[in-house]
Image (cartoon, rainbow, N blue to C red):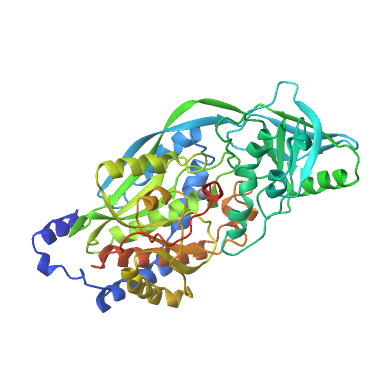
Length: 476
Ligand SMILES: [Zn+2]
């Protein structure tokens, strides 16, 4: 209340506003450094991640868990110091995984550990049995003729590389998002892929797959890495390998979900929005601790710290907890459509959806004129051991729709070396999250957000020079 009064007074006394500056002033950078140090010492994003993953757990779009997550957010955000918290209704597809059973029936019968890919159809009640044809990559499948594929179960055995920046995922995920469609086009009856992930443990990774327009959907599954290895060894003997696949996965009628839009009103430029995005939904297989309870926790903790400061930021700091990032980006599209229609001005965006690994760099996608501001941010991050970055980030999935409308981006790069050991699996649980590393991340996000929300400088438009990527290969 007190802070809101200050904000109102500031509106009528612009000259007295202490920190609206032409470029990052020493005073603003000092404030950002103070916030950084406070966050490093006292922030507690871990407890928000613990609350969401413990009290809600799995929250696949359209499920009862998803509705529980929306209710959780609306109740939980009370007391964070937001001026407004508004749900935006979003219609999402609903899908039920059901049961799945995969086994090799010949030449050497063995059960396989696997999961249905998200949004896929099930098999007939007695399953599908067919010979396997293996491709070492999506590219090899794309080069194959229908004669090789027709009537077969296609096995895409492409491996994923472990990388710090997550580029291994961007490269490998196309086999999941497009592989089953490519197989169906060539007459396959089903698809199994080696899981898109880096763990060699015996569990499989889910995630969406999309069938191109006019292509008949077929059942599609991911195998745990050791099971993909075993299937590959049987195929390598040259004997005919038969697979039996069974799944009761099915689409349900579309359901209601919501984006949660929470604002700390700007004191002097309330119409200029600095947006912090994180998706609230998760896959159904786990508690979604790193995908994405920790992202939600980081942006909420940053907002809590900013709301607790004695003066409000010059610009509005808006947290958006997005609906259904994982299975279709519906929340992102709904938010951006409404924002464009209302003519809202998003000055810059920052997204948290890359796990809870240690932050090591600040990348940007801003106009040339704003590069000195980004460099000043890097100066404040340097004591955290965060160094360097480029101006070519594509950002995360949820902010991609605003980016495509020209909004510039900042992106704090998390070390993703071990993220894909758990991402989209039963193993994405809170014990893998280190509270200290999360405090370090909050310190970085808070410092960057405070500068973005107070510097007079504009961030320009998202640069058109950043090379586009295959949309099917982007993060979800
Ligand atoms: Zn995610």
